[in-house]
Image (cartoon, rainbow, N blue to C red):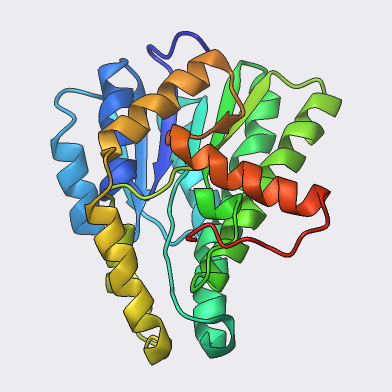
Length: 275
């Protein structure tokens, strides 16, 4: 997809952070936009930044398949087609694996994993039917390629997004579909995920106390990040145009991936990427 002008992009998690920057850059490319988030106010704020861009917004809980189906229907009813899907909504929880609550597992896996599954199942069949070039980008993390202490729930969810994206790529190749796939794996950068607790459903339990200290570390690391959400978004759009699958914006982070692969191939015990 070397040209994005007049094509239709769908962005989940568009109410802040990376989703907002993806929306702004897609608008600058002349795309039409469908914006989704559980944060209605954030959605409206994002839309207000897009100027004259043709866009629609819909409050969407990605954990619910029927809401992604409704988002797909809105997209096709409004614009007739869908070309670029960003499965970007994400949340985080911290703490040792043994202290993570069942509710935390359900919440994080529901958003980070099933949200991507629901996006794929709602949009890809329609993309196949429309018979035009399309692309699916799912936001994972460097935590989807490494194993970080204090982040078991989050890492499991993001590893799932990486392998889900790889399987989707293979499935589409076997189907000879003109649909590209990318998985985005950034390290720490300034984004709204550090405040994802604001969207924790009220019926779920409070965060486990053992995760609080590591959560503060994560917030500090995010604030210290050298790349901005805009930088990550720009790298992502460049990768879409180049039809590149793995997107690792932080070049230095590749060392952590290489270290893990070498541990596996050389029968070594895991090395902490934070060492």
